[in-house]
Image (tube, rainbow, N blue to C red; front, side, top):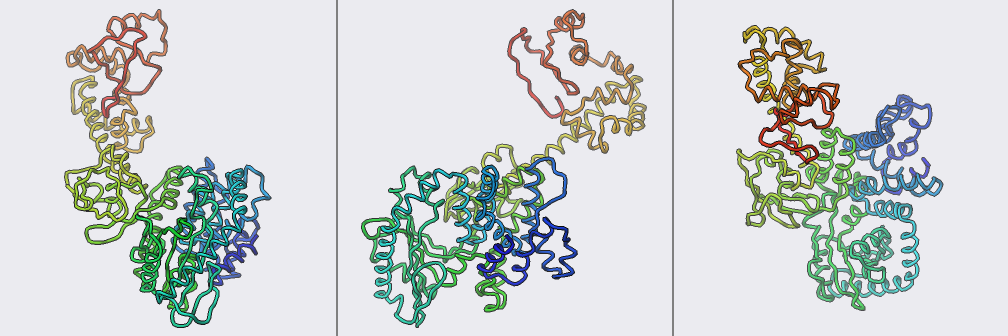
Length: 609
């Protein structure tokens, strides 16, 4: 296994420390070798990489979700420190998937599901197209075995026809490019990503065909509810040229010879994807009236498209450490998504929410939109203008009062589309509402809104709880002396906190405000049960409060026999007993008198129970 992982790392053309890490990545987990041993023998850098790849182990977790969450958390944080960690981990998972036939069917499905959800998505985010396709197809094989075998048979059945069509289109396009002056004849060489050849005289040119991945074909069939015979773009075509100007020249040549499909032209050269992918995409009606997709790019763009972040190591020496000659600021922009993901990792505590957030941030297809200043932002498809506001800055999201999309006013739940120019209108008087959670799509926006609502709710509960204490000291005071009552409360505060297992007085206020404990129980601990029974001065309590207190006393009485005289008295008071709840605040409405068996409804309010 380590040798197989190292071969994949070598195919990626990564550096020597990555190769050594691939060979050693399982030693800490599966043998008695420690990280200190690796550090002494191979150096601190390799020890750190091995630690990043090693799964979280030997720690107690309450659930498999919690263990999975911690493994992902460790991987992402290590990836933020050194991207080679995730490249080795992806190679490790790729080799695991290649040898998955030796596992039990249950383990096969479990590992394939995890790989599809996380690792294929990571490969996509990092721009490693060939690895993403391999992982997805291998997962498809074990997650949907019947559908996989059926599709394999259908693809193989058309293989001869497909290869002939591919050869025909490649020859036609190559001739058209030459006639348009995009390429010239000369010596040739093979390059990664196709079966064509590249002229390397004055202008380079490669035209090649490629077959779509099985999972990509299957998802298209499911999405469009069509059969395999109706999938006309099983084969796609690439035109690889020398420079950016030639990309647009080639696009013009394609459109002058073939009819383009409206709405299917995408310019990722001028507007690169967040993972650094750059290419021109167009769909045309090709020979025999079949739709075909054409991608046009430079050779450097092709390397990045196939190898993604791994292309950094291909260019490291040639461009003094930059990715394809890009500046540090370009590299910083490329990894903005990773920084945001790491920030969410550090904020998220619930393991299930964390795993869902990781899946969302990694796997969702994106829309590209602009700020009024021309800055480009990528968000998951289905995002609203609120998501955009929180993407730009949390404070902008908190105070988002409206938005203009392409100059027109829209609601906060308006879903954004590719190319939209979005202007957020803010107001200091605007604050998040609970219904905003229904409008947003991204984990960042959801987490910020929940955190804000929770913080405001806690602040309100503290105010309510403090007021309840002040009111309780007056109502339950046995001697009528407010100063004496407050002094007694201060003296008994530690006892009260210990009784209810609370950290400090602020937590006491919060618990009262949330309705987690009742003011009566707190006052009982302060003044004693005998004093509470009389509720201080009887003249200060109206009949309604006495009725409420009597009902609550009846609810808390453990003897609930229908022959109990308390129930007769309770019936006379038009009260009602609901369930077997204990230790909660209760307030009874006197405006109606339900009969036994009738449906009733309770309302929970902060500070009122």
